[in-house]
Amino acid sequence: MKYKFSQSLKSNIDFQRVYKKGRSYANKYLVMYLLENNQEMNRLGISVSKKVGNSVVRHRITRLIRESYRLHENIFNSGLDIVVIARNSASSVSYYEIESALLHLARLHNILISHI
Image (tube, rainbow, N blue to C red):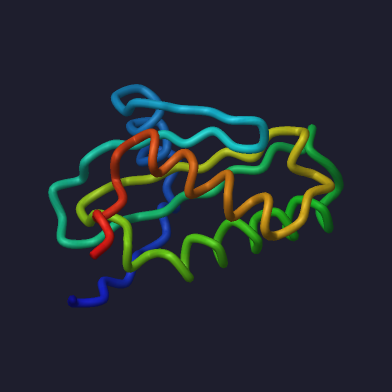
């Protein structure tokens, strides 16, 4: 299987488009918006509000989300814009809880490639 690398979703216009036109699912720690982008690769955007904590906390959550996505990106379908929003409850959780929350939302969206 070919390993596809993802890009970051950076511009505000791209985020707004995913919010307006995409579908969303949420769980205790994360909200995930999804929109097809008609490209070969996925684009991942991560949003952590100031309500969640100070900059140290916000950057930690961002790193946890990015790392859990990176380690599992080979089982995600391609051609998607994905925006992950951290909820307030995510401020004090471990990597494993973020990872399982991310995979849970991916399963709800049916964007995981079925395992062999």
